[in-house]
Amino acid sequence: MSKFKLNALLDITQAITANLPVDELLKKYEKILREELNIGKILIHKFSVKWECILAAGCSTDMCKKIDVERDLMKYSEITFVSSGGDNILKAFDIIIPVFNNNVHLAFVLIGDIDEEGEGVSPVIKHLNFIQTVSNIIIVAIENIRLFNESLRQVAIKKELELASRMQTMLIPDNRELPQNNKVFVTGFYLPHYDVGGDYYDCILLNEEEIGFCIADVSGKGISAALLMSNFQANLRALFTHEISLVSLVEKLNERVIYSAAGEKFITLFVARYNYNTKILQYINAAHNPPVFYNTVSGNISLFQTSCVGMGMLDKIPVINEGSLEIKERSKILCYTDGLSELPDENGEEIGTRVIEQNLSNQDRIDKNIKTLIEKENIVSGSTKLFDDVSIIGIEFY
Image 1 (cartoon, rainbow, N blue to C red):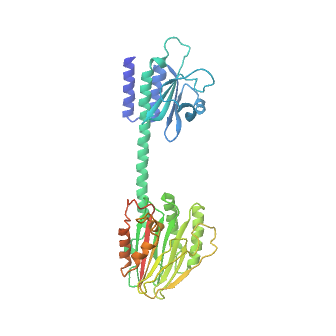
Image 2: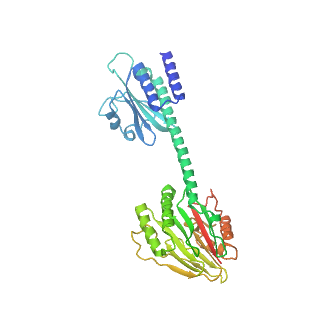
Image 3: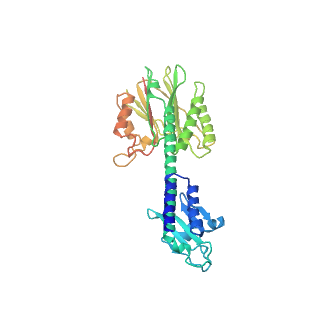
């Protein structure tokens, strides 16, 4: 018997080393107990994401369903012999063997005899230490397989997120591709809080005389926000042309967001068009953070406040107010998402537009203003101050 036990343990460990699947390990375990040790009933409940019955040998699967681990087993912290009296649901078994991992219940092994009327010492009692040992080895091996598979899944997810991040970054225009001429100078900054984010900004050449630009932010974070924003970017690029009015553009975008988000998310948006010849800036602020406008000649600062509700908040936007401004002198506008305005200052309060206005109120070029703002507020990947995506687009008008 001692030789058998040593060989059985060797067989089990070799099977584990050979990376046999869980089903094969359980078959070996069942064979050792039932065929070699004459154990009749084996029931194993194991916790992974939830408690599951991973083995029911010598008893019906209904027995698995009848036993509630939280109710019937969690109270056992050591090997316990089951009482056969009363209506105890566990009385079909002789012994309960709890298995722990870092002092937390990992599994419960329930063992019962095949021939309870037989003479001699019960095989459960005779081989208890061995049963406990082999049970622990098997359960821990199965848990390690689960953890290994989970780590593989996490690696795969990370790679997918890295790919998604690269793909999403491609939706954000490169500063070298933005208009930078003797009429306007456009530049931007983008830093997602996670691998993927829900912010977006863009600048589109509508014709030789006009550009359109925007900044948007999806409610919420993560993959769902990124997917919705990717869809929004495609719709905006398809719809935003020289012919369409800003009001019609916002109405159509709202319809697309309602369809895509099904009322679960919304998008705030600031969108504008600027004509080089007339020097007229037209804009709509759909519940977005108010962009800061600075006239470098007069020194006046103004904020472009909300014109209507955000995209996807209502099936139909009741009122859309379009703003218009003639820019006769050198001026700058800085558009941003709430990841910037909600950064905490030294007192733990949101910086709002105060810090943005301070950084913009000078004769420096808009790209230097943004760089100074980023450095001053320590807007870098891994900063403990950041809790949301940060996106900025700045335009300087000559």
